[in-house]
Image (cartoon, rainbow, N blue to C red; front, side, top):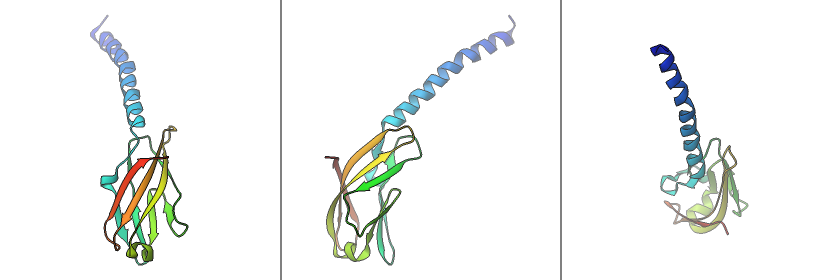
Length: 129
């Protein structure tokens, strides 16, 4: 065999290993679907206090489903929009979120959102129950 033949065989042997490694990394990323509450941000507009709740891990695209929130609130993607009149007066609300990724992995958590007089939001999470 020539050098080129040996190199070609070595490259072929590496491809399954590389594929296995990439699949393993994808499974690890898939298994680590978690809320990233320290990275949550908010924006205040004329009518809404919008809170973005990011998730890390999983395989994009991610879909979000917020549940058990007040009827006056709006949700789109990972953003919860609270009417400014409610946020300005402050309050504490509990709601649920279900996040699914492209491979079917699912994260279910309950959130507690506390806003004091339209200021920074304090967010906590606990099991979905």
